[in-house]
Length: 291
Image (cartoon, rainbow, N blue to C red; front, top):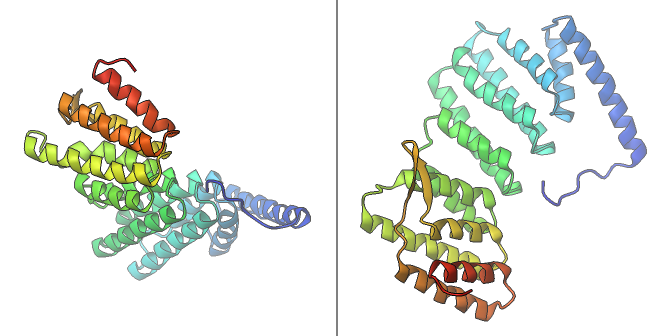
């Protein structure tokens, strides 16, 4: 995670651990070459990927073992699938940004149906998965892997309604105004969750977005994530639909004038706020005045 140092082992202990892990990895690869799908091989591979979750080859090996269980009793499959998700969760808590592990989790969730796991159980897995994403984002709100995974799982589960995404981003933004990913996903989904022909609703939405940004600016004037989102709003919140780019909001001169006044009020309190000063210049140029 950002700015967090991992591990407190001494160099000799670390070398010993890496040597042991390397030996386990070598033995696991030998089992892969032998196409060994025994439970003993599964335990060996489990030990390796839990400590080294970036090993694509061994995650693929685990998939071969999991697929070999197709046709077994439903209760057995449900147990194995839950165990697999717990394994990847342990790995991600050690290495939150391991591409291979996140991809393996997606595979486990999508493959559950083909393996014969019933719908109710699968939906339970999806709910747990979304909860895990929230847990990971509490640990590091800028973990874009967790954000991308949350979006993928929402789509798989049929719960990726734009309004739900916007509500979720609001929760994350309220917890941390500097959450760039939350602002980004909000911008991607904002236009999808509101009738764009309803001018009254659009005006209300714009006012609500600006009010939220005000809170962010006065809480942390140097949070560039919020300022980037603000600049997007000031440009009309452009979005892509039906093969073309459109602006969600009709930004009027009166609105820009009010925003310029509000920006100056912030500068009066925070005269060295880089983003407030840059935004003032932007607004002056939009209004056709010398900056």
